[in-house]
Image (cartoon, rainbow, N blue to C red; front, side, top):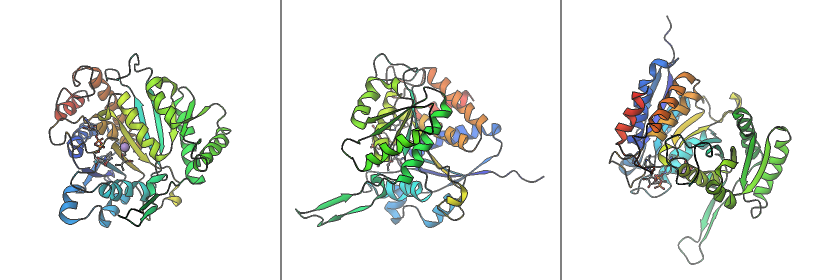
Length: 366
Ligand code: NAD
Ligand code: IPM
Ligand code: MN
C-alpha cells in the first residue's frame, strides 16, 4: 500500500517565550494525531536571535526553500532585546508573509467562557468578532528611506502603500468571511479616511463598490480612533472588522486583552490565490500560523507564558489543512480548559499554573 503523504510543517519556535509555547502546541498536535487524515511531519528551523548573534543570519535561502515547499509554517515569535529592532521581525516574519503573499491575516477576538475580560458588564455574548487584517501592504512594505541621517536636517520617509488590487482582495475576503459566519451579517471597515483622504478614500470607494455584491451584509465604515474606543465601550457592535495592516496590528492587541489576554489570541496568515498567481516557483505553502503575541522578554524562560494562543494557532493550522476533526477536538479541549477556571489567577489574564501544566490540561481533555 502506498504510504500516506504527510502534511509538511516548518516550525520556527523562535525567541523568548516562542519555544516555550510552541513546545505545548506540538504536544497537543501529537496528542490529536490519531484524529488526523494525514500525519504531520515537522521540520524545525533554527531561526532567531541566538543564531543571528552568532552568524548574522536571519532566514537562509535554504530555509526559505523548505518553507515554500511545506504545507504550512508554525511560528512562536521572533524578536529579542539583544538584536536591534526590526532585523528578525522584518527578515523572518514579514519576509515570509510578503514572499508567500499571505495577504490575509485572520485574528479572532472571542471571549471564551471562563476567560477574564477587564470590561465591566461584558461577557462572552458581547465579545465575539473577527478582525480581517490586510497583511501585504500599508507601511509594512519597507518602502521609503532616510536622508541626511544623524544630522539636524534628517528626513525619514516610510511610505503607506494601498493598491486597488490589494484593497479589493482583502475586502472581498472579509465579505466572504462575514457571509460564512452567518452571525450578525455586519462588516465594519476601520480606516482614517478623514485624514488619509487619498489612501483611505480608495478604501471607502472600494468598500462601497464591493458591498453592492453582498446585499445581505450591512456595511459600516468607521474611523480608527473611534473604533478603538468602541472595542472597549461596545464590543458587541462588531462581527467582522476589516482594516489595513498597521491598524489591524494595533487593534488586535486591544482585541486580545478584552478577550482574555494576549496569551489566548491566535492568528492565521493565509492566501487563497489561484495556483498560477502564487508568487514563488514551486510554492506549496499558503499559510503561517502563530500567536499574535511576541517573544515577551519580560517573562521568557520562566514557564509563565500562556501557551493557549499557540495551541489555538495550531488549531487554525489544522483547519487550513482540512483536518477539521482534529481542529475541532483542540477547540473543544481549549474551551473546557478555560471554562474549568483552574488555569487563570482570579480576575486576571495571567496563568495560575505553569506553561507546561496549561498544555497538559488541554491534552487531558483530548
Ligand atoms: P509581546 O507580545 O511579546 O508582549 C507584550 C506583553 O504581553 C508582555 O507584558 C508579555 O509578557 C505579555 N505576553 C505576551 N504573550 C504572552 C503569553 N503567551 N502569556 C502571558 N503573557 C504574555 O510584545 P512586545 O513586548 O512589544 O514585543 C517583544 C518582542 O516580540 C519584540 O521584539 C517584538 O518585535 C516581537 N514580536 C514578535 C511577534 C511575532 O514574532 N509574531 C509579534 C509581536 C511582537
Ligand atoms: C504581529 C507583530 C508583527 C506585526 C511584528 C512583529 C512585525 O506585531 O504579528 O502582530 O506588526 O505584524
Ligand atoms: Mn502585533
